[in-house]
Picture 1 (cartoon, chains in turn cyan, blue):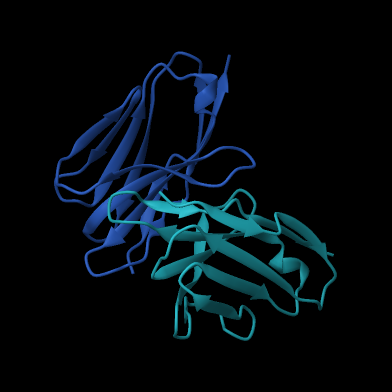
Picture 2 (picture 1 turned 45 degrees about the vertical axis):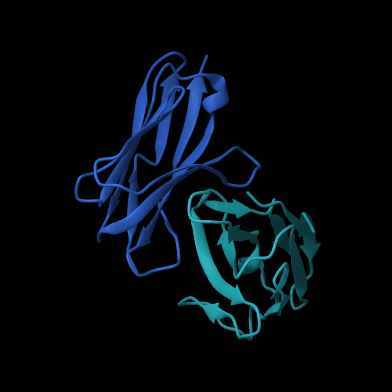
Length: 114
Length: 111
């Protein structure tokens, strides 16, 4: 399996500001996935980040709100832009290493917008 | 994409008892995966099932994939306090690279 370093682990932000979350993987992966998990809820896929191309966003998520960078095969960032209290959530990155090992998740970023 | 439904949402179990959580998909899945998320933690991969009717065991956990590859179950025997957490199933469609997660079953254990 992979090891993912995700940071920050938590942050409290003012509404209207932006926060960039970073994920570093210890091996090269084609796709990285960004999820949102609201308190007590399941995981919702925000977008899939591919190296060298624009991210693919899921319904309900747009690039202007959640811009993603994928400069190489081991790193990605997700920015939560122009934040509002509704963006308070846990954000997780994940990768799939091989067909039999499932997804490995970062430790998550707990975001609170005040 | 497919929708994955999971029940029950909550499971309160007496220590030592057994319980089962169920997962159903609206479409046929190429595989189904199970994850455990401890309180305050992130999801951790438990197992993947690929074959129709497949059954896999991990100590006290038994995972099953239905014959039609549309449903799955996780059965835990002799529940322990270490089993506390939320168990998610997640399915992948035949031509899909994305996982769809169920709502999760949150397990609490009474000592």
